[in-house]
Length: 366
Ligand code: ATP
Image (cartoon, rainbow, N blue to C red):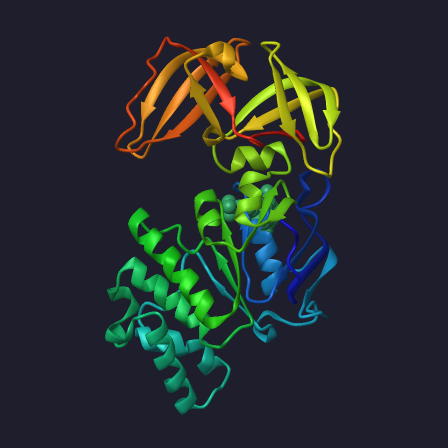
């Protein structure tokens, strides 16, 4: 999908952040560049230690880059201390004041900014309504649930009308059901306020369901930026495909190439047609990736693109996973969506063929 134009809220330009010295030196961010647009729900996604929080802290002004610059609406924000940046943060721990009421917590930032009492009261009222907490405005935050505390933390961060809201794994302390509810709530808040949200998570499903765009990070670098659809269906490299969703990997050798599609000979000597991104010219040894839902089983093994023996059938209610040992020795999973009329047609031990959906097989950089 082509990049959509839009004004940039934040531009991160060739930013490096190094902690420690000598042997103990760690590049938490290794020359990272990314632009985040106005009104965007933008997610930084990656495993623990990849540099997500570090990037957020640099944008917030809690720490400074070792090199590079960060622009907010085109202006370098390096000289601005955190409280002068039109940026606010919601932390994983919420950091609410337990002895203060819900309303006082929400108004706290405005008090610090020296806003007039009447303005604070009106704004707190609006925020209570926005996060649906009017009924509990007089309760202490030590006497409300985790989900309610999360709402108060959001309202407090939104009250001063920041241009950008930074959210550092804000839902990770909530149980599964509440997390799902708050995901919808956060999306609604972002839509209603039009504020740019920069959201940090290591949960791929959360990133896919909530974001306008996602940056996938690993070891201090951004590997790919794109819409959830781009990242899932057109991962640029192996790490991205592996980190987001289940994927089958087949090693092979490129035997020919024609207009964006390569023919790859895999371990069983089967020939697989695989697409590849414009940014790279595959040759020699390559890895072909196929999502489990982009493949299907057929009874006639000889008619499959690849063939093997069904080793296991796992029923998940909404779908069934078929585990196949391919003739060349590779393991392969086919995911089949269940419907009321679909019966399990294949039993373990059966010889099966696997066909790939058009465009389902792709070659990625390792
Ligand atoms: P998590 O999901 O676990 O919070 P993260 O992706 O947010 O991880 P960061 O907290 O940004 O990762 O850390 C990136 C790297 O920088 C890690 O290797 C971490 O140990 C290191 N690091 C972060 N802060 C410091 C610090 N103050 N001093 C030294 N090293 C640090």
